[in-house]
Image 1 (cartoon, rainbow, N blue to C red):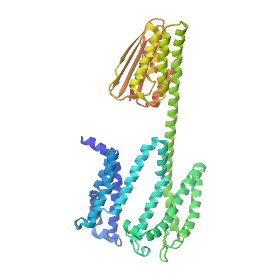
Image 2: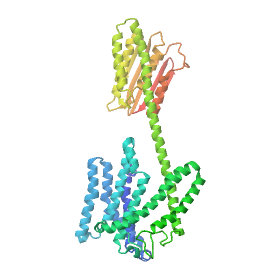
Image 3: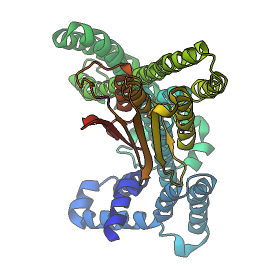
Image 4: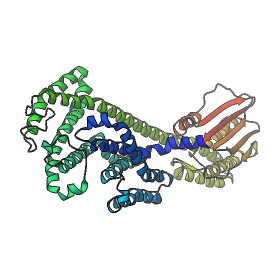
Length: 505
């Protein structure tokens, strides 16, 4: 029991908890820096920062338990109730916690903050968005929309936007931030809203820096990798990359130096001076290129693999539809030949046969094109076919059926079973001048459909004679519709031909 619970937790519960854990780790790191922002190194060495870090981490984990429970509850109770619990966990619980901290001195030691709540909620929403994208992949329009929202471009924009907000908040929190370095990693949303002109002043300048980073990424992905590397090879890719980096970094550096935040003692450049050609600026540009290149290549490979898988699935579905339509002429040729023979003899059985044929064609037209049909409908179609054949062959062939339908909402691909029965009539009845018989057995063994069709063989039957398209069609349909979930054996056993089909439904 415990092993099963641990297996369930490992497979189902840890992914939704992970965003909260990451938020806890980030907040703990921010807290440990905030305790002694100016003398952090001395603080760690002299006062044992590791112990305080573990204490902070443990307290944040305990305070974020309701958030973790809310994340897991959505998996346990999907739907409106699960969403309601998530909203309570991420709105009601933080509101109560923050109110207690501001109104009750006994709760002043709580570490739950607005900053931590924004971080945890943002990461959690990203997780559920990515999960919704995975569920929506089967819907073309929805999948296309989600692909754009959760693309690598959008993910980078989101990260850069978060960085802009964080840096703007830190600058708003610190008076004269360019003169009071290093900054304390604090984000006060209330203060940012109150001083919104100052927030916007810092935000647009950090947005320019973020735009420079995105420009390096965009050129690397859409020009250097897609157009140069993909068509000209690695050597020209490296040469073009070097030319781009050497030409761009002083231009971007000059642009950054024009922003108002730069002061005489310090600038926003990585070199922190007013020299756009400084080697440190080039080094940062090279690091952005070196970091983004493998990330872009990995993402491009994943995208290509997914597109190839979708294309392969579409081709399989198209082939499956084509194979299903091939069933119709195979069935019609046999039945119309029988009906033609009865009409020549002006048999009274022609009219009932024509009615049966109409019922069978109605099933083929309206149900045969579906991906799955109810097992009971497929069995009823099979029984109608047997009655039609009995009208045609009369008493020359004895048909014995043993059909046991189990309870349950079982579905199967249409027009599969009939192909084995058609082969039995074609190779066991139509070629025989003597009396013959066919035996059919169908049952459910757990979740597996077991269908056995056997027929007697004429005395002069040749085992090496070439068969028609029916059995080949059936095998291909099973490969496409039930890969690895079926077994088909069709062999001669003495004076009988036995076909056994098992499918996991």
